Length: 295
Ligand SMILES: [Mg+2]
Image 1 (cartoon, rainbow, N blue to C red):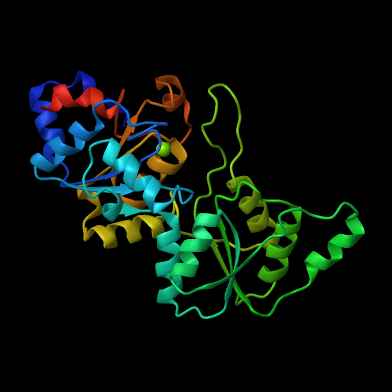
Image 2 (image 1 turned 60 degrees about the horizontal axis):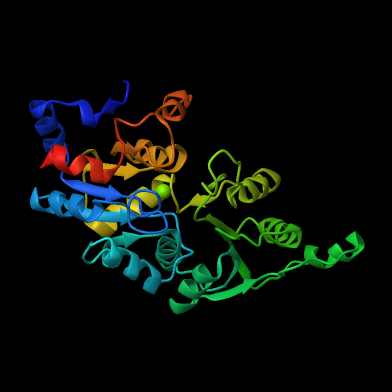
């Protein structure tokens, strides 16, 4: 089905739309805020709550601290945003607890993910930050470490060749868990420019190790299930997922059985329509633009 422009629906169709979901799951970056909160977002979520919808946030961004998230939610006029937020680092901790993991995690992640893992009592190893110059020295990165029981990738902008060597070395043991948080191949840094994300590197490790990761970030189905469990939601068809990225947000919605709304804050309508396999159910310019229409 072609995506429906919410801005063009008449009153009856808008009522049908609003009656079709009970829970709003929203992405954060590019939907709620760019560098600062986007206009009207606080009012949008207030309106959703007034209409009886529960509101939750689901982001792939483990890079922000709790304090940073809390100040952004507050600036956007959203109450209890952080308490209702699901991010990969918390999903990874819950998963490791569920399998009674008691070894050391090798982290190819941002520092904040390591501190979340450590705050849940997990032992972590990381690095090296830089490799040696002479390739012959790289043999040291091919030494296994029996303590390692999981390799975790999640938004590491300092990913490098030695880390790839180490990850592949540990993953040769089939009992070592391979877990991925954010696997974004691209990040929206500068319009018109191609900016790669950590997902490019975790994909190489997946191919070379012939291992499929447990995907605890968007668009992984396990991540959608984790977000539902946290939000106390049992029926995915009653969830409206709002995002600005096709692969991650519309992809998660498709994998999880959610309805999807794409806001065109980072993608043009042409880019949305040209995606070969993923299209949202609905689209709109922004959340703020929907406030007068839905009020
Ligand atoms: Mg986003």
